[in-house]
Amino acid sequence: MKFSLGPILYFWEKAKVEHFYRDVAESSVDCVYLGETVCAKRRELRLNDYLTIAHQLREAGKEVVLSTMTLLESPADLRELRRYCDKGEFLIEANDMGAVGLLHEQGMPFVAGGALNCYNQHSLRRLMQLGLQRWVLPSELSANWIRTLLTQPEIADVRECVETELFAFGHLPLAWSARCFTARSENKAKDDCGLCCLKYPEGRKVISQDNQQVFVLNGIQTQSGYRYNLVNDLAELHDIVDIIRLSPQAEGTFDWLEKFKQNQTGAHPIALTAPDCNGYWHELAGKDLLIASSR
Image (cartoon, rainbow, N blue to C red; front, side):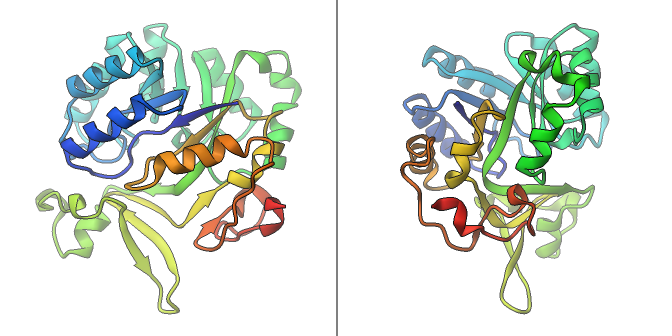
């Protein structure tokens, strides 16, 4: 089982991003995803900056994947997407079917991001025909769903040709919108947001009237209020998942990486409490935490 760090989902200052990836280079992670996937206005780092970091990480022995935008809203976004897909030096995570089309035209393999919503064997087989090399499971799928899907006859003969990656740690990306809810929460227009996401390096919490953190606002992306955490579920994943993905956090990312690596067999469980959750994986409400999985 390998471990990856997904793209940074939040808007951090350039110096913080560069410092984070210097730490990544010295960490035990196997694979790193780079790129802005949420909002085109977040331009603290450009493609050339990510390519510089990508070369540094590759020299440190990491597999590097460039991640594309999830929601394309303008011709400029499409031009930037083409720049990512035209490079050909690094594997691309396609988070939009437009990226899949561009990469297929060039005969390039790709990683299918979770936002592509690949829920069944027919979609998976079709994406493999287009060049899929690895797929990231939609985050609301359960262990039973995945086991059933991967044993279907439509993909049984090619199962060994594709890697399966699971988002296992972090606030779950749930939805994307043409509107920016972080700007809206500050009574600002999306086109005149003042890059207010910089003030929320872990997103902006949404608290319900009964004092529950129901969502996290992250620009145009809405995330789960509770943090998804499958650290105590790793022992049952070896037969269905090849790569465990952790989403970078403002603090504590590398501590959690080591906790995950130490508990691959379930020998070192971590005592979890809300607001951690693992409900989706166990066919429960998403914000639920099945404590029994840590025994």
